[in-house]
Structure formats: structure tokens, C-alpha cells
Length: 438
Image (cartoon, rainbow, N blue to C red; front, top):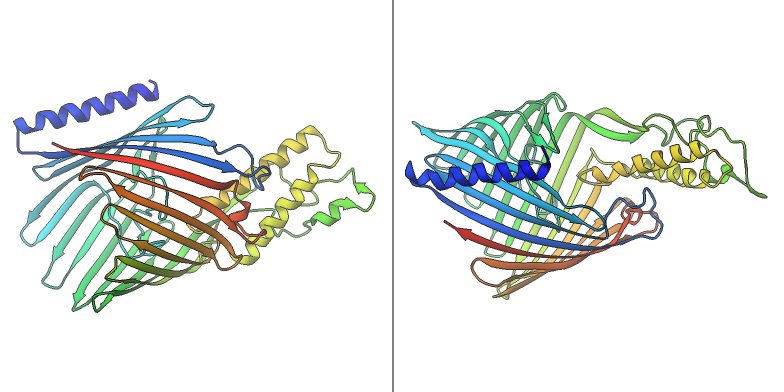
């Protein structure tokens, strides 16, 4: 069955079910439509891989939400258009859960989005949803299938849950590792406190705590810390390996050398170079504040450390490896070796799949809350290699149900930084969103 047929059938089933539900009980719902075009300028010479990002693309979303009788459903239909490619269609069941109150306890059964912790650019305590931050295209987030028990008190609440990621994506079912977690929340005057503990096969044990303090009417300070007994990282097995040959060793004074055994030199491998390594005792720490003035201006600052990301040394080793691989492509090698080298370089692009590129980062932001239009500027700096991301954007409220977002994002900083190694140079984006209730 084609993706288009699955997309259509899923939408029809959910729509018919929603329209028939008033015959059984009182239901409320909404439909949301988003059109999000993106124009992208790529670098002429990509460091890791070429041609994987379309220069012009657009994503259209149709989000249907319905709730009643303790049940909540949310489904998203997506259409993705890319330059020189056929349209792609996909349906995602974001949430489907039942809630009920039994005595002093609230029960939840089903697939629900739960995002814990505080933070604008990064949330160490978001251990369940792993929600992406600072995106320019609205992320499609799926909840966690779970059984949860929650109890509210006069000054706080506590939650216990167990869940396991399962779903359907790109014509195949997937099943993740089960996770159990507990969280306590307390409000003490103008201070919010929270603590959590969780466990799964990958982490074994995670313990975290966070706070949010409001001082006066304009200053808010927040922070959080997470300890993980185990965590996973992906590395190239060639980066920093013993016997690795640097770029200058591949090129002689008289020109390009020949007859080099690239496998023995540690420049390429015929298998997959990316390995997942288990590490111990990882820590994530975040501290931030925001200041709001009567004029409508808000200033924001956050700094964080994430040990599950690359160190400066690890990034320099990966960069040196890639430079040597680019040089090796110019040698008098066989077409088979050249293809293998290209594959090895492309595999290193998985570096950008991390939540944070390098360990230490900060974000500074200034925004204005206007009557119709609210502009914002964000600057993110990678402290270990001086890479930068600049985002200029705004949101204009056309009416209670319609709004548009637009702006640009520019990757820059030091020439040897990770952000400068990205295939993307600049992006211009726009989004129209309409919401309708029924």
C-alpha cells in the first residue's frame, strides 16, 4: 500500500470517528493547517557530504485534535515537497490516551506527550520527549505510550509512569526500550522545584533536579542538572585512531603521492566507520535567566554543559580525519576506494544528529512583544570552537485564528568550527498557520 493511501485512510478513519463521536458524548476538537516553505543556500563545497539538503522545500501539516469522555486524540498528516523530488506523504498519531480520576489519583493510559524541565534552548530534564529546541520548522512530536499515576497536593504534585516507544514510520513499525520514571514537583512561594529519577536499558539510572525562581515582576532565574550512570555516543572509529595519517603526510612536496594503503593508514574503512560507544557518569547542567521590561522587551540568556556531546579534542580529531579523507580522494586511487572514502565522509555527517554539537554552549536572545508583530533575535555560540548560529525572526498575528512566522537563520563563526562545517550556509523560512475549532 502506498504512503498516500495510508495517509488518506488514517485521516478518513480519524475524521469519521471524530464526526460520529457527538452521537455518543460531548466532544470538542480543532483542526490546524500549517504551510511552511523553506529556502536554503548550501555551501559550494560541503565539508562532510554534498547534496543531501534540498535548496527549496516546503512542508504542509494538517493537525486534527479531538477530546471528550476522558479521551484525547491528535493526528498529523504531512506533505513534504522538495526540489527535484516527488511529494512525500506521512501520517503520524501524535497522541491517543485516556485519563480518569480515581480517588486522589489521576490515571493516564495511552500515548501522551510529556515534557519535563525548564529551559528555552536546552532542557536536561526532558528525558521522555526529547523535544527539539530552537527549530525553524514546527517539529512533529509523538507522545510516549505509557501508564501513569499522578497525585496533586496543595503545594505540588508527584508522578509515576512506565512507557515504551512504539509506532509506525516510513512503512515499518518500530519499538524502543521501556522507560520507568518518577517526578516530584513543589511550589514554595516564588520558587518552583522539581526532581526526577528514571531508568531504562540505555541509561540504567538517571537522577535530575531543577528550579525556577521569580524575583519581583521582571526577573526569572532557572537551572537544572541531570546525572546519567550510562549514556551512548556515536563516534567514527577512524578519528584519533593509532596510526592515523594527517593531511600533510598524504601530499608530498612534488605533488600528490600514489600507492598509499588508505585502510592501513587509517584514512578509510570498508565497513561502517560509525560506532556507538557506551560511556559512564555523564552530567548535563543548565543555568539561565530572562528579564522582562514594561516596554515589552525581554532579554534571555542560557548557558549549558552536555557531556553526551563531543569535546573539543573529539571534534578536532573528526575534522582532521575528514580533511585527510578529502585529500585522499585526490590521490591516484581506484574508483572503488574513492567511493568508499565518499561513504566514510558522508557517515561522519551523523555528528549533526546530536542534540548538541559540542559540550558547552550559550544562547542570548532579545525579543519584543508587540500588539500584532513580535520580533526576536537569537544568537547561539558553541564555546569550545566559537561556532555561531544567528536567527532573526518574527511572528505576526493576523487574527485570533491565523498567524504567520518568518525569518532567517545563518550558520557561521570560526572557520574550523562545527557549525561552519555544516552543508547549510543560510536559511530563509516562512509559515502560515490557521486554527479552526468544532
